[in-house]
Each structure stands twice: as C-alpha cells, then as structure tokens.
Amino acid sequence: MENFADYILNEETFSGKLEIAYYLSKKRKVFFDKSVIFKSEILRMFLNYSKIDVDKNFVLTAAILCNCKKIDNAQDIESIHSYARKGAQYLEMLGFGKRFCKICEEINRYSNSNPRERESDILELIDQFGGMLLDRPERIGFKPDEAIVLLEHRNLKDNYNRYLETFINFVNFIEKININELVNMTALKRLVKIHNETNSITKFMEEVVYDYEPKIDKLMANYLENESKEMFKKVENPNRPLFSEETAKKIMSHIEEGTVAEIKE
Image 1 (cartoon, rainbow, N blue to C red):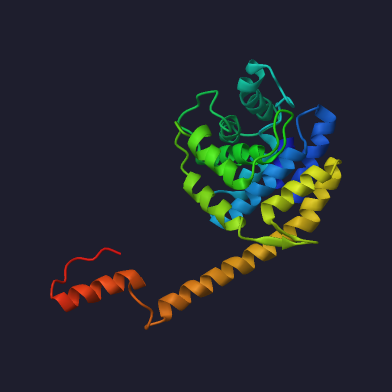
Image 2: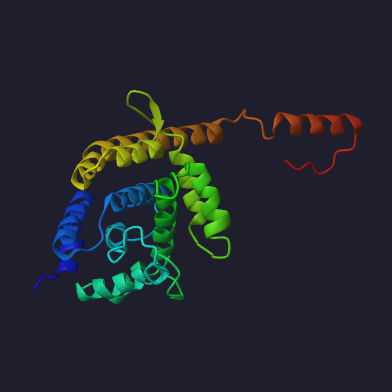
C-alpha cells in the first residue's frame, strides 16, 4: 500500500509536490508557508543552473518538507535547535527512508550529524540564503549580494559547505538576468516582490509555478546559450590575443630590450 512518502516522491512535478505539502499542512498542522515555496523555487533554479549530480526529485521533496516541524517566528532556543531533528523523526513516521530523513535533519547543524550528506549542504545554502532575502519582524530582507557576504563570512565562517562556491556563482549568474514587467527587475528581486505582495499561500504558489517559473526558465536557458556562444567564439578565433593589452606591452618591451623573461598574465 502506498504511503505518504511514496505518494509525494512519485509526484514528478514541482507544482504537484507543493500542492501535496499544502494539503498535508492543513490536515496535520505541519509548517508550510510562502517561505517554503520561495526557497524551493530558488533551489529548483540552482539545480537547473549547476547540474549537480543529485536526484532533483529527491532534493526538491526534501526542501519542501524539511521544515515541517519549524515554529514560525520561534523565540525559544530549544525549539530552534530541535525542529530539524523532530521534523526528521516525523518524516520517518510518514514512510521516508533513513537517508532522506538524515538529509532533512542536516538542513542546519544543531544535531551535529556527521558525516553530512551532500544534499544537506544544498539545503543548508538555500535555507539560509533564502531566509536572509525575506523580511522578518526584527529586520528587512537583505539584498542578494549582502546575503551572500553574510552567508560566506558569518553563517558558514567556521563550517565547510562543499557547494558554497557553486552557489555563489549561481547567485552572480541569476543577478544578471532581468525579468521585464513594468520595469526591469532582477530575477531574485522579482521573486521577493511576488512573495511580499501576495498574501495567500495558494495564490503565491500559482504565481511562482505558472508565471514566474516559465519566464525564468526561458531567460536562464537563453542566457546560458548566449554565454556558451561567446565562449566558443573566443576558442574558435585564431586571431584573438593570447594576453591582455597590458601584458602584451610588457612582452614587447622585453623583446626590444633583449631581456625576455617569464611574464605572468
């Protein structure tokens, strides 16, 4: 007999997974709000960009459910430190395997689970970065470049995350992409705007899946294609300079003086 874990893992569409999680939250009172959808969409874009060798279906499901025992705006330190572990235990009751639950528990480092699963490193980046972009009662959301600095030099200062550099490259990439609405707006800023201006969870889900997602996927594909074309142009051009103009001048100067030495680009 199919259990809940089988049901949501067998659902291959992102929208379908979100709907299943939404109805679970209504029936079982588990945590599911707009921030879950917001972070999961960033994860979906990151996986499409990075092509990391992980099971995309598996990781997206984990991202949607790993905060299931989180308490909104919790002030109690014990709750903050234990919600990921309690969530993993709850997910095991729903039929998820031990590795899936371990990945969800390792979204933060409070349980000291070690060695960490590589999928957990992905979830950690998305959870922390995505959370910093959104407003909180005590502060407004950070800009993407500010959030990256805090992620690298504060949050993960003493912790190794194997995908941090790849994620930084992704954020730099996605920040180059503008979504044309009434005004030009970067992709992440647009996603934050939709989040902040949409009150209903279901309405936000629809905006992300049926409007934002098709646009950003097309823009990302076009941008990556153009980048690839530019790269091949440089490779195929036999007359392209081997060195920068400044380095070329240094080489010519040394040649004229008869003192050609090693020149570092």
